Image 1 (spheres, rainbow, N blue to C red):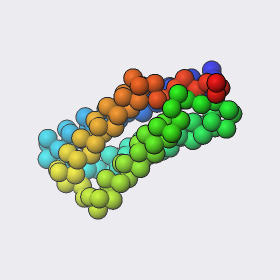
Image 2 (cartoon, rainbow, N blue to C red):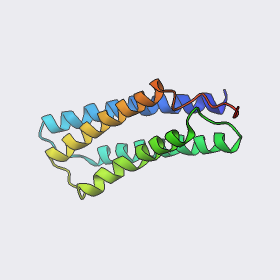
Image 3 (tube, rainbow, N blue to C red):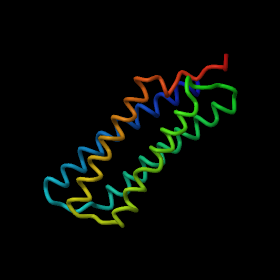
Image 4 (cartoon, one colour):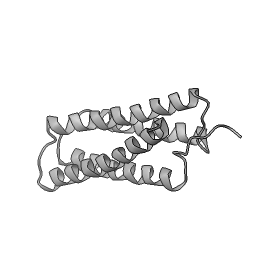
Length: 130
């Protein structure tokens, strides 16, 4: 398995995990439950996963491989790393129903953004520059 394959596998895991996290968050909101510590751990995990994908992209870049649009790739990945902790900061750590709704909507937005990256070939394949 190459690092390019590992990057794709981790990115697909990110998409699936984001959708699951979005469903979980919207269920908490629909049940009028506060956000639990387990959910905050999942938010940290998804942020770390996005950072790992970005770091793996940096390793591939240092090996001399490039995606089709490297600048767009970096911008998208930095967005995916920063946005979940950013929402936590904007909400000042609130854990009520509206915060759960906001996290749910953001998770689905992130999932659609990641799917858009796949469809536009922003993620790869990582190839030597032409």
